[in-house]
Length: 191
Length: 191
DNA sequence: CGACGCATGTAACCTGTTACATGATTGG
DNA sequence: CCAATCATGTAACAGGTTACATGCGTCG
Image (cartoon, rainbow over the protein chains, first blue to last red):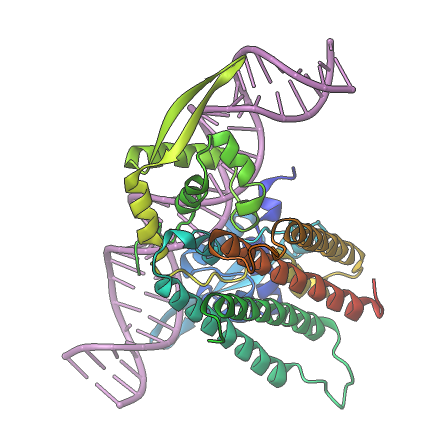
């Protein structure tokens, strides 16, 4: 099997994000809480640690940007070596990630409960969370990816971003539908 | 936030599986390659390591089963403490796991490629893999979870197992549909 | 004056992955 | 005889999570 690191996307997710626009660790942290973070999560600790390693590898370089009354920002940009690495990585085959759904494990063990109430509550929480994501992605789609009458269909980076969002929408909707099916089946009617 | 371990499902996934039927580490490894493994993957190294820890915690106990011409099997069963722990865990709220989709990160960086061919090939591979899972789950559903005319609708453990499988079906189908949408959008026609 | 946002980190720990290791039997 | 399957592990390392730590500015 191919070396471990080729399949670890955080470094490359950071390269993708920095290639779109230079950023500090703090900026990246916020990006990984939304936009690219909808498909690849990372905490600030991971980001700072990884940025330091990437700087050592010469994939990114930082310039200190002094600010009034705030600590300096270390603004990172992609070096030409980083850009080359990104292009190399983009042509590699990627893993088909197996599902990992804790709720499914719980449901599978549900016959050990006399009272299903806590599990049903959990299912309703999950449903609400996934439905909220569907709404969020739908809103973003309407705001940022409506077909532009002046420029015709989307293309290039915006098209790709839109397609990624469509994936999030589809998967989150599938989870909502699944929660509904389970709740209907276990309670005898709709939640 | 709640302690780390309450959200780590491997120990509890093992409890669920052992509660269904006692097993050796080897048996568990195979189960985690199918059935429960469709929703929670684990390698034999993880399983042996975790079983040892669980034995230390008194959640499981092993009896050595001598075999003709083969190494002894260490057959693990759930202790009453393990059973109690399982019931406790089942009533806890679980995390809504964020998506983590490497392919989406790649797609988002696709505008850095002059030639999309390798990425399109990767998409077709992913599509094929997800479609294979849909077929597999559909086959299992037909074989194991068809409504039984003698006993009416499913209930209890079999119902729960079926609902879990339904989730896998829905999510895998969503991935297939997404791959089709992306391929159609990027190539101008159906794959 | 207290909470929140900006901004960057260290340390400890847990989980997951990969490679390595052993040794027997069964089937082609 | 060679490969696959049964059966159980160790060791090294990479990645992810949580807690801890610091310090300034702004807004209410």
